[in-house]
Amino acid sequence: MAASKAAYSSVSLFHEKLLRSNRILAICGAGLSAASGLPTFRGAGGLWRNHNAVELATPEAFEADPGLVWLFYAYRRHMALEANPNPAHYALAELARKKPGFRCLTQNVDNLHVRAQHPSEQLSLLHGSLFALKCSNAPGCKWTDPYNTADPLCPALAPAAEKNTDPTKPLPLLDPSKPLADIKPDELPHCPECETGLVRPGVVWFGEPLDEGMLDEIDEWIEKEPVDMVLVIGTSSFVYPAAGYAERARTEGRTAVVTVNLELGSAQGRNKIEEGDFGFEGDAAVLLPELLKPVIGEVEAPLE
Ligand code: BJW
Image 1 (tube, rainbow, N blue to C red):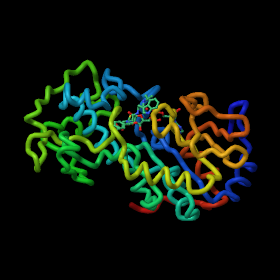
Image 2: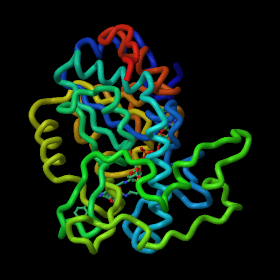
Image 3: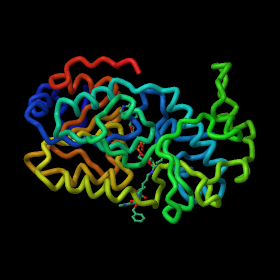
Image 4: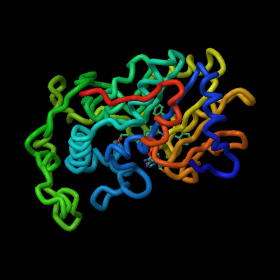
């Protein structure tokens, strides 16, 4: 396992610290699900057709072209349903069972932590879920459907759920040279309660507030007692508030901050690895089960 110059990459030193740690906070990002076949936002894989994935994740994009944004989300719902949790999701779920003082904050909306049976009281879905639906008139209209896995969600979104019959070619939906169906708002589901708003994914877009109750609870947890260890896993640490938690939880001389990333250099958004931190470079799905082994043992994926 390699690390940057300033960081420790000694697994035995990490194990010593892990065994002595009770209050552990993990902050997870898209890299955690990369080994499950789900693309990340930034860097390679961050393009959907010729659109920047981050630019589709905004209320403005939805307002301008709800059909396009829904195709993007319908495809990601489909991909997430086809994917399976990987050994890193299972390792974190087991860590939660073994260490009641462990809390996992995830930016991922793919439901893979939940499907890996991560105890729900030790998991915060910072950016919501692909499988939650809400009304685009929210917060005015309070309608939500917390768990909906219909695939496709409606007939107009069927191209996003198409099976790839020829794996040597990209799906027509993903091929920017093939035109996309121009889906009109009338063809998309409308809120069953207010009847005027479009149904939208129950995720948090840029400029939108995260769930206030959840944020209060996280603040309370961080402030209650010093945190022994923070695991920053598969995230570029660009997006707030998630990117701020490692520093918020750090008590100099006490808290081990541990970055696990395919490219340690890319995880430095706002969250620099400091002298004395740990850094492990590689695939989280390979590294986490090894790193957590003294506490979790060998973890097998349960039959879903
Ligand atoms: C691997 C790997 C492998 C690959 N193994 N590793 C303070 C300062 C400045 C700005 C702000 C601030 N506070 C708030 C803001 C504004 C804004 C923000 O942060 N902007 C930044 C761009 C600066 N934040 C917000 O708007 C948030 N809202 C908010 O703060 O509201 C306040 C408010 C209050 C009251 C009223 C109104 C507002 C909301 C943020 C929502 C982010 N939403 C998205 C989309 C979610 C839905 C969806 O999934 O479509 O969340 S954007 C996108 O980025 C998504 C992700 O969760 C998020 C983070 O990305 P992540 O997970 O880090 O992925 P990548 O791709 O960036 O990185 C992957 C990493 O994995 C890389 O490092 C790879 O190397 C690594 N990797 N393979 C290990 N196998």
